[in-house]
Length: 407
Image (cartoon, rainbow, N blue to C red; front, top):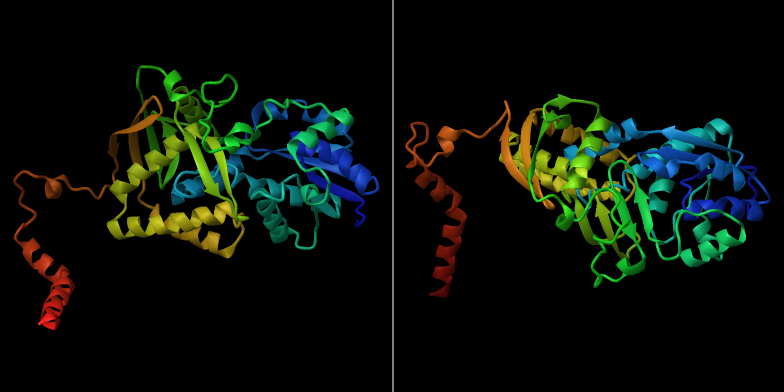
């Protein structure tokens, strides 16, 4: 093995990174380990992290508050794009990795480290997301991925290793779901979820953390109004507040009503299918509100083309290609489309459902006088005959030629 004197570790305090510190000490000739945790809204998961990191062998721990940057520079640009991976996944883990990895690189360069280590498995997407970001900002930096090197083959064996090295864990063998939590979402993978035939245990105490199941939601619907300026949410129910607070407020509201639960079998970048359950209560509300507002403010051709861009944007985010010229170019296109996406969207939340309840915008392209079924004085219905003749000309010509060739 190549020797490294100082290694910066992407540290969450979870199972993987908890066992990695002593493993690095044992297998890389006792290097200095500097742990770095990016705070993107994990909440209480960060409690006691410094003590744990130091006890297991790290020389220091950085906890970097990245929440505001995460929301404004990663979440909101993706929201404006309308990007959803494979139609449902709101990319909660995907766009959290680049911002964390970027900060880790900055600390590694400041500390004079010669390698960065992460705890991503060789089967997952996160290894790509971390390492593409490292290559973008420190192309010569060494990278260590223990899951691609060590003899540990499962999370069960990781727990065995932790117990043998007296490493405290917050999980048990029975609750050993692979989870990722941040301000935007919580993902669940593993255990019974590995069989797509199994229904998720939404009603089991402790499974859902950001909300309740639709069955447990209140019997009374609740309304919420989201205000946007140029595609960016700026207020909830008329109260302007910061970006992080908007997401937090909508998470609480959506979670209360069982909003934002997704059970998805997705295609990982590495080629396999995986099954995950996602909680994204506030994100689901914001995506719906933004989509509804765009139906008023975008012309048809822009709206339809933007849907194509949204799909490609989602792939770039999911594949870890945030820091690429194409992603930046697509964001520039998206920003142009959002210049008039300003207004208020009212939604009704009821037992897992998000129901449209009225939308207004000073830039609305909807003209009631043109659209009405009643009498109007701005639209000559007779004009449609000529339009249909021209629009249908290719069909008519083909039919005439087909008929002629059959004779």
